[in-house]
Length: 377
Image 1 (tube, rainbow, N blue to C red):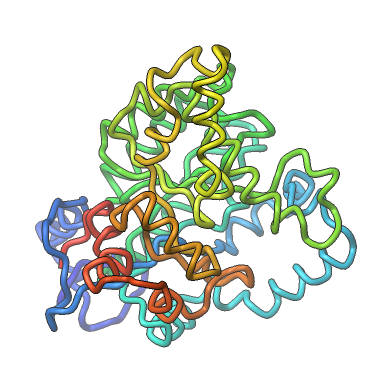
Image 2: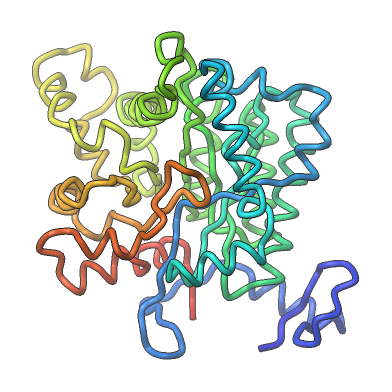
């Protein structure tokens, strides 16, 4: 297979480094396309990982002097032992985070055909001044685009945008989709401690543009932003990550983002946080209290059911419950590669789900993600 490569000094003979016409064809080829059936050349359904990260070492070095860790809740609200374990994890798993060759070997071992690769969650850099923020986002996104261009059959990309400035976020979103061919964006679940629906952020235009472009939002937390009680035992990840997702998703629902943008596609990691498994309480509140009905016109769970959830539930029975409640069409294979809180054998885990039909398994392992991400093979 020939394709145009944009990587400087690439010598791979399979790549087309030639004419402007070839480059134009390649640019068009990166744009998302709609497809009904997604299968590989052997007729088997593709297996797509919706939840996996890439750490950009060049961008990290560029901002190292600004000490980004001081803005990271997972660092702020952690004891010394947790910091030591995390530092060791970065030393041990650094090649997996940043080396595509290592990543490809792991994907083959895990049975993953395609990764929807997104930035490491702490590389959103919302704390930066807007001009620096968009510069960093562009650097992160350009590297993801290089990865996709170099290995077009193994990766699609979810980019990042500077949510600290809504206008710049929309502009970078449009560049990601229209110029780089990305299938969506990863966002954190809050911006410098502010909820995504906080009026001072003005992100309504961002959500509207995501819907207009028909791409996905992958909403990933970076710990709980008020984690003073979650310092020990790695609680700000173990408890804080699903808690942060629960709060952010609840705001998207109760503040009307999903009501105003009914075709918005939001993916919640870590099996949807706590909200996906305790939705009935918010429905009860909606019925019982007028202060829970100030914006939305339907029960909260009706909006939650429009969202999508990865398979990182760790317990097959819990994943079975998710499938029963949200239907198999809203559940996507995820690994959280390459972090230690991820799932190293995702296909084996899915196969252990009770009463899982073959069609449901194919949907969860890749067909759903391929549809959402417009992957065509």
